Length: 407
Image (cartoon, rainbow, N blue to C red):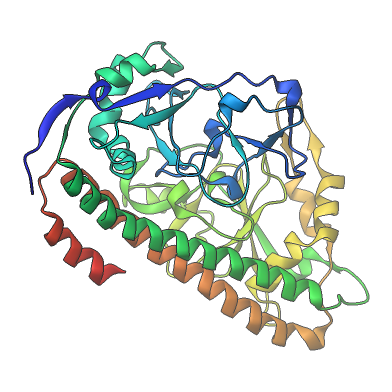
């Protein structure tokens, strides 16, 4: 590799502010109009997560200056936690046929042509070194803000352009495989939902408590650790899919106490009874964890009703309407009357259809869980290689061999 040079970011890129779109011009009723990119649309591991977050579009006319183009590099410039963990978090505008708009508190990065590759810059912004510098120079206390000038003052080491392209290609291969797995996961979930809807329900709804046991989680938050059994949180629920990357860990010493009431098992249906009402996910087999706060689970009482079948009955429109009807609206939070829930009625396919449908749903959810498990491994590998590659501590050819084995 060529010689690496230490520079200030302001020497190799510029950052532009977005536009403060009025809230009155935003709508969550998506009709195909331009989408206003918000900080909530960024994934904490980099990139966007539009399919899992609130998306708003512009009702009025879009200012031409703030139209984004596919391939534009954006970075987060505001963080609502005092540690500044997401300052500088990057994402690249996708080429998916939709129009995106440059919102306030988000910076658009322009790389100096022939000096800095935008994909390498993406991974540079993902590095801990850049985040730490932005957090230390940010203004504010509870809410931290950075600026184009503060980003420009960040010091980093960059290699020649050809080496940047090679590094970005290695890390990009992992991200491309992760994105492919996510598309497979979404397709499997969509197919599972379609399979369930294609089968007619039984004549009469059944009492939920006759079909499944209900358990709730602890009412406090434990001390969390970097590794150990999972402490499953509401944010991990993704419409049928349990995203463990959104949950924290417990220590082995604390785990028995937090899992004393119930330890989730493979096939349990996990859901939230405060906020995010109506969402649910299937617990993967072989995962050790404890329910988080405001979380509960349903455990089927018989093999005739599989966890995947119960999950889709929970997510079906009829039971979602029951959830809305039973919701208790509080001053600050909505919740479900958990003690009453076993008496609710839920619709399932006729008994003769359940075994055949369960087999299809189980197979599709196996695909969902396998791709999720592989993506956690790939993401861990990317996060291990990234700081070594963008600082020159690891040679590209050595990283390439590792990545080729993984993908």
